[in-house]
Image 1: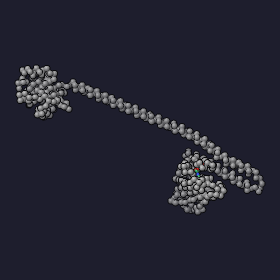
Image 2: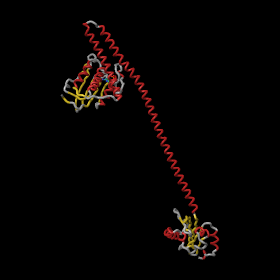
Image 3: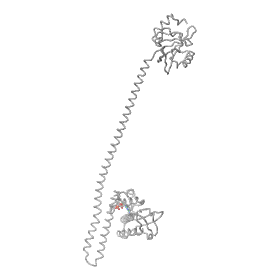
Image 4: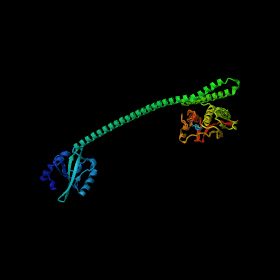
Length: 411
Ligand code: ADP
């Protein structure tokens, strides 16, 4: 191995000019040459490493793996960078471990194989890398914190926007309610004035005429006018009852009173009152086989429902027509049908008939408030009943009411 002997000036000359550490080992991993830089990096005197095992420069924990790497490397004999993808470490004479970068160059001289390792101490570079990594980590953390803060702010802003939108919607709603209420008041006032004016002037006329029939034999005429007055008062009373019902339903003050009563009592009363309103030739058919039915329900409400429906049937039917009131009882449910042969409800308006104040176009010539059906429906639904109808314009309508009656029995 003369090539690497002490006084071999060529190796010395060449290797000392290089700033990287140079370590040459033979096939047995024995160090055969080092340059000054290598000695300095590892902390050895000149030539102190010659003859030592390469493991002298490798930390103990990497010894095992290194031998295998070295042998396979010599076998393949190609120039390459060492430790691709993993950190390499060297150990100094004083035992301190430090990071290195090494390039390996296998070569052969006179049939002997060697490997020349070029070694750089990368402690400083590693420290700088670490610093950069630390800085990056700090930066990332800061960015994360800022992003988090930003998310928070965005969230708060979103909540604020939602709150504002809600407040805006509420304001709009209350404004609309106020406007609706205003419109309703105006509508209501004109409706009341209109609805009251006609019957009141009728009452006034009849009362004036009654005053004129002073003779005893004019009793029949007096009675005719008194009956007109009674009718009109009854009509006004019905309207006022409807208004009261609306007020109670709206303020939640409505209370229902269940009591036992014979069904025929209510039916007779309703029909009796309705008879006074009949037009010429009109008549009401009603069942006369219901005397036995005693039912438990709110009597006043049943009367209000039937009165409203029969009065409508009379009002919206012509002279010489028949109004049928049918009653049937099945499975604890009473069904009432009020059938007329009147003007009917135009198809396109049928959807709105239970809306408060709604009146179909063909009904506008008759007096009315558009309140009755709305109240009837509300009361029935509150009591577990229902109301539906079928109708054909100019042919007539059928209103069907159901009420549940648990304690019904035949007396
Ligand atoms: P009103 O009769 O005072 O107008 P209702 O609430 O009782 O109010 O009825 C609402 C509307 O339904 C009526 O204006 C009318 O257009 C229609 N209507 C109700 N009953 C009948 C019926 N038997 N025949 C034809 N139209 C009816």
